[in-house]
Length: 422
Image 1 (cartoon, rainbow, N blue to C red):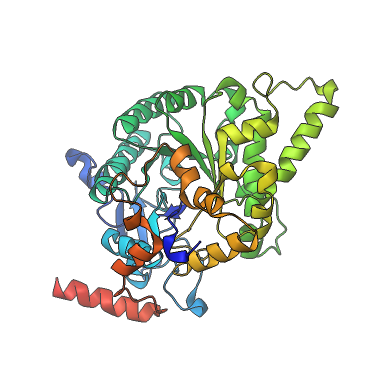
Image 2: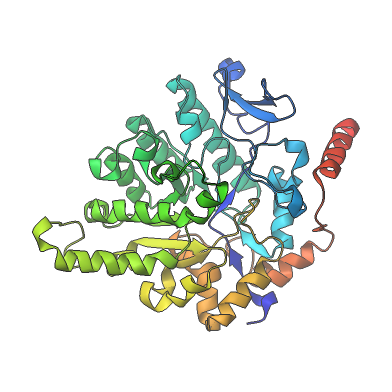
């Protein structure tokens, strides 16, 4: 396949929330809405302040566009980030420069599944913040840039009745997926096998909304020694996806909700074949445990192929397992603006791996966009023709986008200059 003819859709990217994210917070309570301000204890950093406390992480390794010697995991300021991290017009331009038709955006400050918001004591304010976030992103942004973002929402994790109401509301808004905690007991909530989440999962099935499980809350389950570096967490990320998948499968979730669709985010795909082998051998061999967790007559592999999709950034071994796990279950992710991202050369990196693994043109189309379109019931060509959605066509729109690595100081100078001119 010619690189310019590819159509690329990512199911894992991240919002760096800007100051207007919670503009739909009720007017009478606007003074209690989350606010982007200077960190009270570290004024050199920006921070989100909610209910009198600093919440979450403003940037979380939002380093795309910086020279690699300036990359870090630490919080920073909006002014020192590439504008595409937080400015939607610039995000679309950066997507064009990377040949990416559409992205799925997970929150940052709010927590990938709204877990940072949920940690705050006044739950009424939290529920209002969740609705305001959904109105802003699923409502405003996804409608303002039709066809460029797959709408993803968050719901209350501590108030199931409110969560169910929000699922139905999001369904009417055209939301295609909701981010849920991948290992809820890792953040102090009941497991998916407990029944606690059943009303939410049932509502998602009723609305044909995909459950997206992004790694994050489960990292605390991986006990590491005091000498462990940040590298341990980054490299072992797929272990969290393995735990999540194991919980869903052995916990009987799919048996109870056979039409539930699950997207595994940012954990790769290479682990899937091993875990399917392990689960199927266990079910066949360990009859004494009395495990009855799958829909009647289905193997773990059949459940995986029907109910799951997983994504990768670069992963030759994962692609090589496609005959085992099913090419129809593999998707691509950009992970912009995090340090794992291959922006702005994702088409080159991706096509190189797809060709090296011997994928046909038909299989390449499946991985790059068709699997996502089918699984999320989302039409990539609703708002543009296929010819307009290709890497070549999008990059032609971005000929003036500067992709040269730029130091934080220069981004800060430009940001301050823009403010002064405004």
